[in-house]
Length: 335
Image (tube, rainbow, N blue to C red; front, top):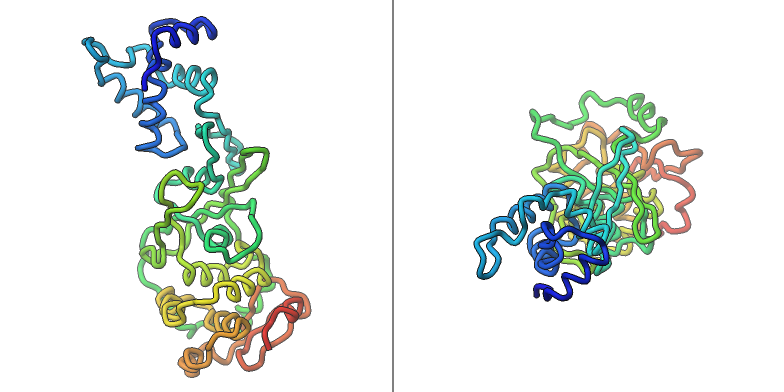
């Protein structure tokens, strides 16, 4: 509902605002509704410009002029709607790699999930790894590191049959730190600091990416489903809280679709024998693993010893599966 002339006049005097941009005040309720309906609780430069354009094109009742005049600009929107009326608050987000900032304008009339703020950084992105674990209640933690993902464009197919894989290559790769993205953003919201890790995973045609309606989000968001989340986590433990958290996630999942998770792993066609990692987690979360693991008995990588994590110190070996794992998780491994 538009404000009355008296209410508008009071605000104009309070903030010493010129009448040629009074439309931001008169139609502030409608502006908020427009934002909610089309952009959710987070605005950026493009969405603000879109709102301004719409209100310039809509005529005032009984008049032949738009609800917003020609002098209504992006800067004036920020000055009036954000800074003075405080209907939105500005969040500065730092690109830690480049050292520059971008702005998001977050609704101040409700709580906004920091995960939704993170997703606003990259169009068509989805939550993955530790963030997806959190969304699916696979961890009791509330991670301040947020992982958003957008798959790479399709490349020429590559067969991960392992014919060219040697024990030396595996040993060398897992003696190093896990490769990490350098595209990291940081911001503070509601008194808490967050880091956003932007990932570009290999193209799977968004296998296992689903849309969910969640409390605290102004619109449906995309995230990996439970099976895809667990595979992503075991492949990149450093993005997922580490192997203890991942094993706990397998245990907390309770109803993993075993057929689906093995199908995903086969489809993703990793060059490393991650089927050993999957069997290890399923085994120690008390799931059946033997029937699917048996299918890999003639795999050319089967004679190779694999690693559950990077840079492990004095690991133990599960000889049945041919995989080394940190001895620190012995206490949560199911016997």
